[in-house]
Amino acid sequence: MFKYAICNETFEGWEHARICARIAELGYTGLEIAPFTLAPRITDVTPTLRAELRRQAQSAGIEILGLHWLLARTEGFHLTSPDPSVRKRTGDYLAELAHAAADLGGNILVLGSPHQRSYPAEVTRRQAEDYALDTLSYCLKALEQRQVYLCLEPLSPAETNFLNTAAEAVTLAQRLGHPYLRLHLDVKAMSSEGHSIPEIIRTHAPWLGHFHANDPNKRGPGFGSTDFGPILQALADIRYSGWISVEVFDYTPDPDTIARESIRYLKECANKIESLA
Image (cartoon, rainbow, N blue to C red; front, side, top):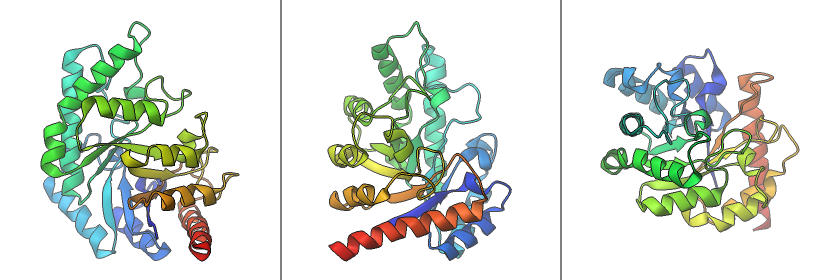
């Protein structure tokens, strides 16, 4: 019914091949990669290494779906910078990330990175949007060339002052009007909006390109009070065919338990939906 993936930074200290083998055993078919787990910059990851990472994943029956935390732990990049040279440098780096995602076998980039997108007090929201669109313009050719989707991720006001709701992200995407710019939705982030999560999913269904499953308590699905039944029902209702990727920020008790129990709970919810269909 759904395709399940998990983010690789959950498994800190594990070798890539070991991660792929274990998540395949647990029932995942996809892996989402944070670039900082590979190298300080994605451009430091050689074509040879990219090919080997892809081969190891495929050998385990795992698809590397793409990259997230795109600008995390980097310096010199910013989405809404007033400095044109910073915007161009950032856009060019996003293009490099698109090439890397495709080399690894994926077609998704999740643009979260709250610290690298918040705008300063002297900049208006409209200016911030204009700056962001200018930044993104530098990566559009690569997105189209490699057929990689850049998915804008709304994040809570506690994390950033830019793109806090799904509606704001869709508005920005509409202004740019490019077929490879989509919406990413995250359960933890959506919990900060004034609408129910199923409502947000249904309202923005035509734009949805990727989905993160987590709880507002920063743990995996099923590790908190969020009922994922209605959430998965909404995804089923809109015939979402993309990935449901487990992303956590609290790595307790351990990676294996997080991965095992998260997919067990998600499949339990999905099975209930199927039984009622």
